[in-house]
Length: 113
Length: 112
Image (cartoon, rainbow over all chains, first blue to last red; front, side, top):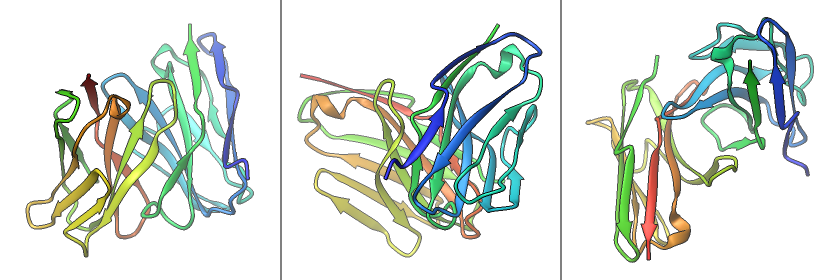
């Protein structure tokens, strides 16, 4: 099993550009989530999904969209990138709900200039 | 929604000493409390977790305690080693299992 795979690992965007961060898991996990990590701020929940076709907002959802058309994939879309979205983004998955072990991807370091 | 506070933000100990990190949570419905370790440039990884029906759990040099009445839980690392140096995060999840909320992290430095 590859676990949770994120692409790309690094990305530089210009302000106003859009892009999609990819996340895929091969563990047949129902629950998937996106976090952003900023220095001194810990891991903040952006969006989550409890199963295919179901998504909801986390702590910091503004400026981000998600969809969950399959169990395996949970892409995160930045609609119009802003410098405040410069961060490290982690995708995570859990077997059933958020109250089971979360497995993280390797992260995507995004810089918006 | 859930709010998790974590203290201290930095902790420096000598090799062989014990380290304690404390967290408080706000949602009394939370019932799952994991701890994650993140080494520099790596992804967070689970080191231990505890559920609300248990007061304490140990795994070799690591232990977690939970006080549901006071809504706080702690991570204890005994006989610290340089390889324990990392950022540690506590987290809490509601019984509904819809969100896992993290504290801001503690940077632990173990000097030999």
